[in-house]
Image (tube, rainbow, N blue to C red; front, side, top):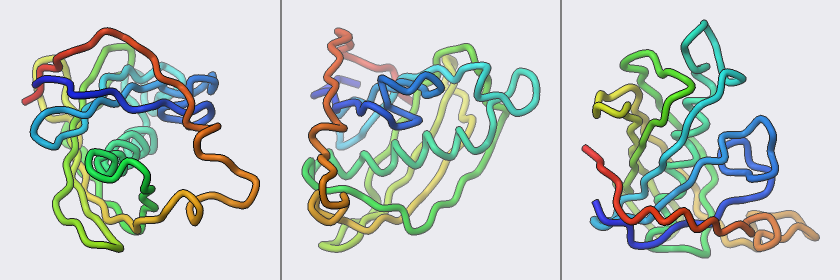
Length: 166
């Protein structure tokens, strides 16, 4: 699939934060066909059992990915998770690049829902999720004195123009 544009990374987020030493530093891409995609590698610091990523980190990645699907059409609106369901299909490894995709399944002025999927390099489905989010403007999503633009400040040009997604 063709990359249309790249989304910003934050400073401190556990999933996309570029200054978070324990984080994934995951990249997110707006793709053709109203899909958001990610390329990332879990670290051994994200382990549950040896060789397997902790379910909490998998859930956090899916939550971030599914929430970012909103930015495909509403880049100045934030999603606040209200419900989320995760299904773990196969063990999710760390130390190897994985890929994920998500898209919106329903959209209204106040709410949106999305589905997300994590795959290995051979396109085996490892985990999937669905979630519902409340839409908030940046003024409502952040406390007084907090600045979304200051936190979401990294644009890393990695030259990726296509991602092979199932």
